[in-house]
Image (cartoon, rainbow, N blue to C red; front, side, top):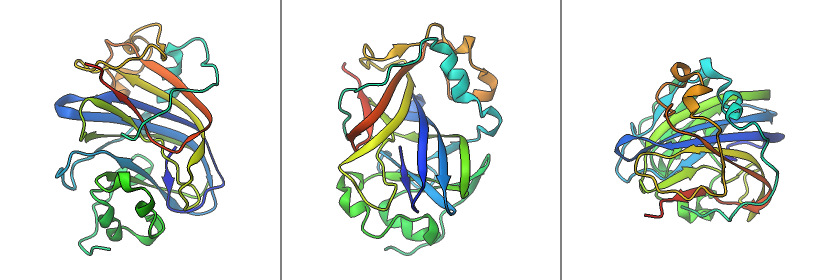
Length: 252
């Protein structure tokens, strides 16, 4: 699902799309339904290429395509059955304030390293010591989206980033909802992906869209995120699973 800087009442109906882009980059589109008692930030750890710098993440405004995932479902006439999936794999420093950009209804920042969280407003940081409990993320960067309190279906948040491992497709699914790192977590996700030209992912266990996405998606609104000539693939994650990110690895 994701990591939150403050406690949340509920998070549900999470949808994540991923696709390989040019020059070793990856697209991610993320949407969910959220209920929170106060303003907070959603933090997505990203396996960025080392040394990419503060401009590594390119945020994409999808405010005008709030129905991105609603349209994406049109490629799959039969709903995915709930059930288990293969176990996923893991794929205080001072300084100037991090850049904040407006992305649709959000303000967003890219935090290039764990130590750079000190450059964010305190409301949008995770509790001190959180990342010490997740050593696999010491070399990650972080996309941070600032969200408002209340009940909301969050319009899709989208961005691209340079991958540390271009042969892997990454889905940010690790959970931190109460300031604690739990071994297992409740999943309510649907993952979507497209293959890039050089990807050799094994998608036999995924549902395949009945047509190329260009025949059922509003391609101009999707900007450069989708490949209209290719099919899309889908997999549902429901129930209790190890609290890790999900990755696809090329088999070539």
